[in-house]
Length: 135
Image (cartoon, rainbow, N blue to C red; front, side, top):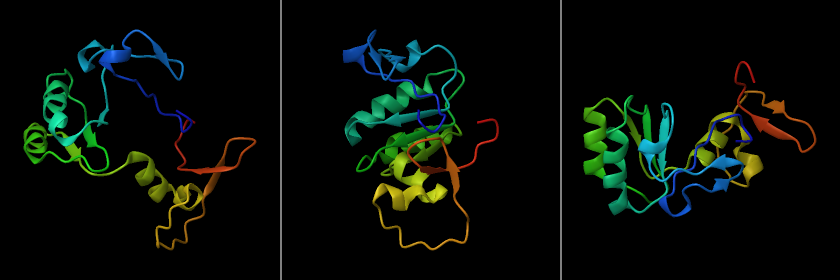
């Protein structure tokens, strides 16, 4: 949310409540409008049915992302067969930080040197970010 992305929480146990100012939905099909990326914060076994739920959406999400330590090759194959990009065993926050140059600020030593100049964004607490046109 702090980086300008629209994050929609989905959690059957918290449906109808608000989380970080956002309405929590009980399932992916309850979310009004298209979903670009489904991030799975469950174990590898649960990733299968959640991937199938995402594949039932119209339009299909562009990406299904399984968090660190979450891997389900069969679910990934089903999604990729429908043209959906699948990322497994990765954290979007870490990957965002790695790509933006912000990873050092997150306390992670990437061992990557770059000549890219970071873009400072926001006021108050200094943070680095990837420049997104229109933001």
